[in-house]
Image (cartoon, rainbow, N blue to C red):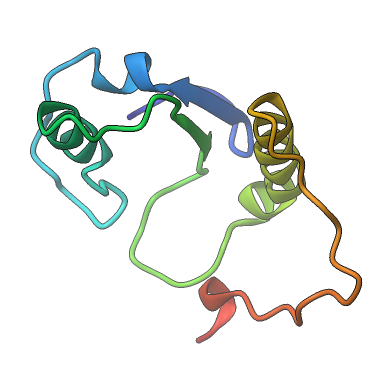
Length: 109
């Protein structure tokens, strides 16, 4: 899905918005085939009832490792949206007594 906006802005998409248009050719690793997966599982009768895609508008898309400052600053808001959605679904998130160590794969060189 492509959205216009300021780098770092969140975009939230529900299932109906994702599958509204026909699938397009995948052109990069940033095109994960979510629409195709949703349509396939729906056809098989096993699709999820609830879907929320939380996206962040990038400043640029290129082949590299790491997050731009704008996208990095949007991560806490994206996490908050996921927690809000879990709560809406009756699955409240819990803070771990002992947090896992941070080791984001996208920061590895």
